[in-house]
Image (cartoon, rainbow, N blue to C red; front, side, top):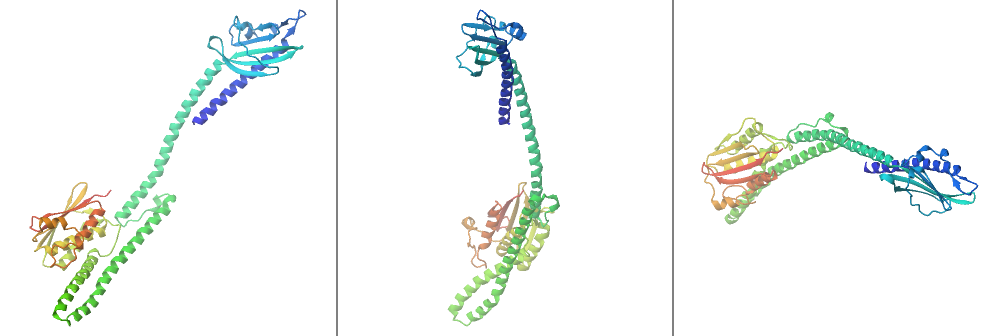
Length: 417
């Protein structure tokens, strides 16, 4: 727009100058034809042959003719004698100059020959009214351009807003798809982003299949290891007593890994990544699994009605499963799990009535491979895995002494938006 204004201004100036210069040239032609040489060898310019505007003082139209030692001036110049620069024959010089009473003159200066005498013709016209009109027009054009720019920016904002509103629909649809099994409604989306939606759906489907295959493979591996371990156990029983003890310890560790992977497969069940956790649906089956594993233990829960955690269902089940498994192993009889809404986060606490742990043990309890009781089966990976899950959601996990007497685990999970 700035370039347009500049070009427009230059074009108007050139148009004005061409128009005025053509009029000045017309007057110059009239002067040349009206000039007469008297018998006394003096040049005269009859006033009746010139327009009356040159006869009015300071009219804005002026001329001066120089031939030999004679100067012929228009009456409009009154007593003013303009300074005329040197010029060569047949040259036509056009320039601007400040004139009388703050006028701006457009001057045409040329030199010709008539009757073997060199004649210099100086003609000026005041173009200040045209300049003022031009400035007003330029000011008006600038205002129009500014208004147009504002209007175009508002239109552009509306167009972009309307376009991005479509992306908001995509964002909302993908969020729903992430938190539940609801699929994206393609009819509500522009055709330009449908390929992106299809790729995201294919990626989620592929991820779901990979996770399912991975969990199935772990469960199958753990299950298949049981038979060769049983054969190995029978071979160990044929060894010497010292060797039997060493072999039994090795078998015990391997059995703990196998049992752990089988429990993980039972806890999580069918893998469905991308689903939020509906606690009323997911928690009862998990508790049934725990009660079947630890029938002598009692698990009490406290949670808000219709609680839905906006976190991945598999992650939450694995987190709760590991924490409950540890609580059941170390408790005497009772385990208590509580869910609290803290406005910007969810608080999950699990405590047991076991013997608890020392202050020093609390500092290292989440280290990978650390176990607090070597006599209980397990490799100590459960709490470390829980810590990784919690940190993946930018949450935190802490340990304190429980009111029931054992260990209290507190998990803070930020609410996802």
